[in-house]
Image (cartoon, rainbow, N blue to C red; front, side, top):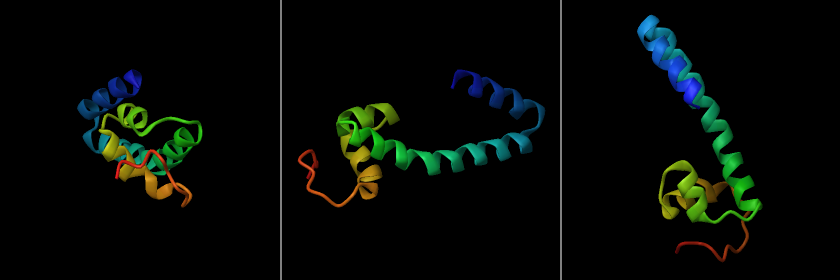
Length: 80
């Protein structure tokens, strides 16, 4: 991640439009992979607190972001 940050920062200076394109592609990739990662983390027993910490958010924000992708089953760790 640190390397990606450096590469993007260099690209912003060298070619801002190319940097914007790269950022857009990274955002799209994140949008595709984040739900799968959230579901996989829950499937391996991660708590909403741990998932929230991993993405830099609260437990509730993690639940709101990822719970919709989980199979519809009773969830004892539901923050409601």
